[in-house]
Image (cartoon, rainbow, N blue to C red):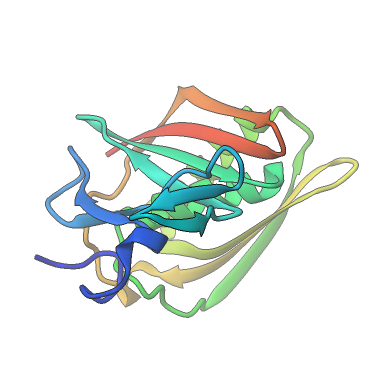
Length: 188
């Protein structure tokens, strides 16, 4: 079985995540990042483990990819979702970027921005056969600055179903306690 996480089989999965096949997402294993602990610490195997500041996990669904992401800021939460979608179908490590694109999007609700970012990922894959290996989102007075560092899709190994569409009615992003939380569904 191929390891889509790029990790070694003997690594300590209790701290970084647990590998399991995601239903409806091919036969390869997936890295599931544990959600953050409620009080900043978790107990795994009897040992206290500090929860990650930012991360994502895949939520099992039969016909699509559902991602839950979290981060201290809205911008980093949006980036975590893009990383999760790309990591769902390519093998690690990610290739080096060969091109960078940057644009400013008008001010809009975060849910609309998330949908537009996912559509931009899909557009880059469909039209130019490239994927964002690094994403930056920055809040401006006039809107959002987005930067994709892109690599050619043929410079990586596919290990899962490539997403085909964004389900815009199933995007949620909100502030919870001291962090941002996002859930999004993508058809595959």
